[in-house]
View 1: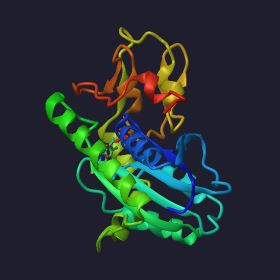
View 2: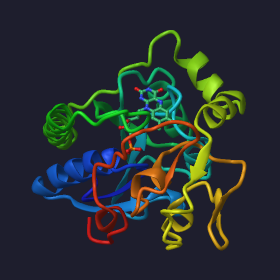
View 3: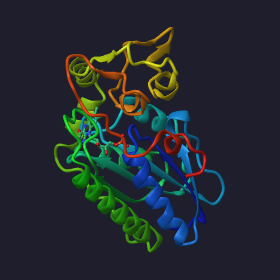
View 4: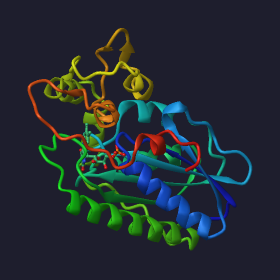
Length: 259
Ligand SMILES: Cc1cc2nc3c(=O)[nH]c(=O)nc-3n(C[C@H](O)[C@H](O)[C@H](O)COP(=O)(O)O)c2cc1C
């Protein structure tokens, strides 16, 4: 990577991608790069001067969340700057790798490399397999540091997403799969537990929660799990289902300016 600094934009629902992005940033910093970790949900702007672009996103519906694509589509021209990307996933990200590269190529970035890391499942966990999850996180962080080294040494690669990649990406850009997810996971608030702190409304990247006396859910949830994960008394859940709350980091880390 020729640039001396990196703007690494990330979105993370429950902290998995944040941990991966932080490990990549640590690896790049160890190699002498200056790295800013920036929240993609706050908007994205083209890196300036001698700065490369990094993108770190959650795999969702074999692709990523519609608001992430919308933000990336707003990116101005890269003017030949380097770009790389990572994602975290449960196991399969068919519609992400190739479309992301295509978008960045089209915007004039020099696409250096892409890596994806298996992380713990962040939804519908009836119980959390703590030890197995710790193992996945450690493996991901080690692989993320290796990826940073590959970027520094200009040997990172961006493999194609395979023959079904365009189909999965096309599907994830439609409203139907998200509608189906929303219907499968209808959010519900337990008013007897809610402490009316409003964290859920502040954290929702889709602006789907309005804080009235209690949180009220609108109709454009992307099922990122953040409100469920970071509700202090675990008062948000899915109607009729009993899941254990999962998060990879604590609230203070999720919102910290020092990453
Ligand atoms: C709505 C939703 C859809 C998901 N879809 C996929 C998927 O298609 N493939 C996959 O491998 N993992 C999928 N996952 C699992 C997440 O990608 C994985 O747990 C990820 O590490 C979560 O990262 P985050 O905490 O940074 O948001 C999905 C998770 C959610 C909440």
